[in-house]
Length: 104
Image 1 (cartoon, rainbow, N blue to C red):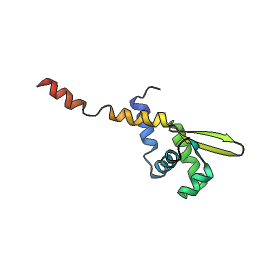
Image 2: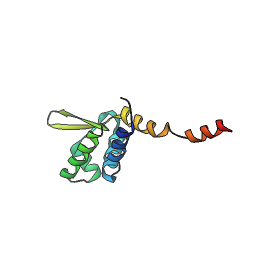
Image 3: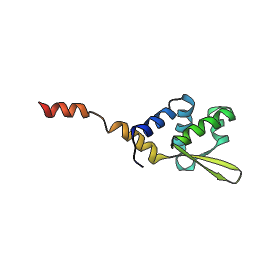
Image 4: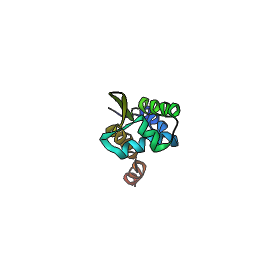
């Protein structure tokens, strides 16, 4: 996956809500084991209808994925994509300073 400014904006927008950031942080904390929707609800005390909206938003931004196992839907952080999103921002670090050094 190649990150561009549109994908980055979508990803950062998705975590621009306290509740969505909270959901993503909980999924990151549990690692590859993931959490069911009920477990996320318990951890964050978010109503089911609101949580469904937040999960859809995160899924549409490619930050999480869901998998049905029996009667439960498990949610997982997409670690590679989250890392790519953070790297996109940091790869611009100090670029202007380097340009100015070369001009001198």
